[in-house]
Amino acid sequence: MFAPVVLLLSLVAQIVSQSPSAADGLTLLKEIGRRYAEAQSYHIEAIEERTSSNELHRDWQKTLLTAIVMPGGRYRYQGRSGFGSAILVSDGTTKWDYRRNEHLYTQQPASVVDEDKHYFSDPGELVVERARHLNSEMAKLSRQLKFATLLPDETILLNGRSIDCYVIRYGPDDFRVKQPADNHVTSTIWIDKARKVVVQTREQGQTYMMVGERVHIPISQDDVTIYPFTEFDPQEPASTFKFVPPADAKLIAAFPKPSFEAELEASSLIGKPAPELSLKSADGKIVTLSSFRGKPVFLEFWATWCAPCVDLIPELTKLYSETANKGLVWLSIDSDEDPATAASFLAQEHVPWPNYHDGGGSLGKAFHLDGIPFGVLIDADGKITFQRSGYEIPELRNAIAKLGAQFSSVASSASKPQ
Image (cartoon, rainbow, N blue to C red):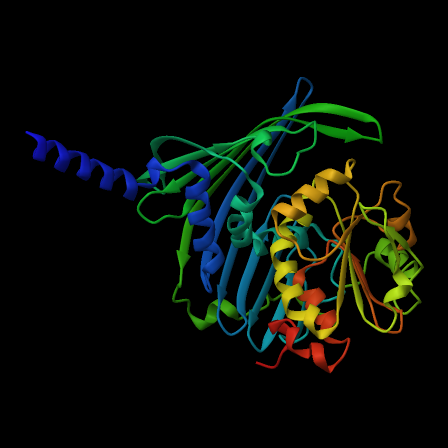
């Protein structure tokens, strides 16, 4: 009797250890996130339906997104919404940017990096930008959370097919960094058990719409996104990465910049000497920015409550490992309410560079900070060569590569010859 019982317990243990449903939701999300992060080529389509309402208001929006990426600098991002539609496509040699509502498109060498394309004046651009992040959003999600609940499995209907799914749920208290007090939204994710891809997400709860600076109007939110097509390592035809302009489309050299971007450029400090800063560490030691003269410096303005800031940390840490030994000085400046919050987070993430607290906001004001994450690059002569909020890592890499020959290897692959 003893041997059969031992054998049965052993079999049960093996089944439990091999089944993702036996693990917590965060473990499963990490597994799925790695799959998306490691994908070198993919084809993802998404259909989002967003409903927001209160007693006297109701709004419904539908958005269609597609992201197709393959090696060799080939990609196709397109999005359609009630406010605008656009396509961004590249065959690795040439890239096209088409705005359907304006009937205009540009054509450039694929090697040209849009370092100045930071603000979006056309709604179609915003939709395409969301398509560009379809894959990375899934890849980064688990890094933002400290806990996620694994719910009972469900079977959902998608494209006429029944799909057995793992179901994961998390709320505002499950994030690693504190969420805004008015965030009461709960998210649910359905994962295809057989293919290990996300097939549906839903965000429900109460949030607020700001009117002016002080009025917060409560809004019920219900966002459902289905992913009718997700494939890794797809075999896409060459025509996918070519743009054939419609008969009514006109080729232009470049899209005009919005007026507010021109105003921001006018206040830019690029090319000017960096303002002097006195940075005080937690132990009371003070260091001045000018004391690093002779070495280039990268300043990162951030906060733990800023999700895009937190998302950048792993990539910034990797870039630090590539540049610190070449002479680039790294400093970060947080704007958290409590400096201990930022210090604790950075220790947990094993961030290697020193961080300073901007309690009154004076440090950010000195650099005309207009939002975070905000990156500033200063050359060895003390002049600012890069200054941008909401920047992306390829932009920063290209800016660092221009500091000198020793940094040329860190340039974004998009700017290197194919």
